[in-house]
Image (cartoon, rainbow, N blue to C red; front, side, top):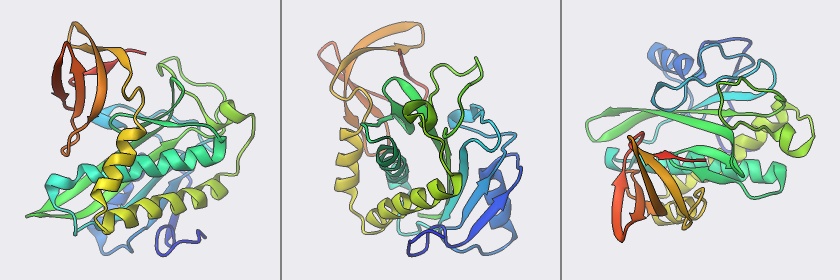
Length: 250
């Protein structure tokens, strides 16, 4: 069990499930669940990423998990800080394993070089001016060596280090980092989270090409707005883009 205050103290391990986030939602609908509950799936048959994208993962090779939190201290306009919190946790976790720089590809993919190592899907339930509960789904490629051709640029901890990892040990380590950043969020250290997130961004302050519809844009990432929009400096002007409005060209 993780050496944390509450994250990962209650663990539900499933041999197979459609999606750990869907399971977490059904669990919450059936009654109270301890904060920090961790759901781990050995095999996930209908994993989801951002905007309905599929998350493809080989059984018993990777970490496919969901955490349940109750961030009722966080007002809905500030909910992107949950994304920052989760992305920083996975980034730090990965850096501690591979001993090399890991980046956050906006909004919450985790990259090693130009390859995707992990993805995060956060689903919040809002009532009035409070977030009543949050499900943080995390998929990390761990021991997988080959990937579907459908995936553009995947990598795994094994491919980066040539080491095979114990998934239970890594799950405990992940709990430590998730709780570390969630506690920063609970203490409302928004400036700290925003600065750390921005400085960890993939291609931050570098000039690259992006795709907006059929148009190719050349610009530089200079930050992320409070509501989670990517701020891009292009042709001498500042532009802000929401999810799926702009695509990285890699």
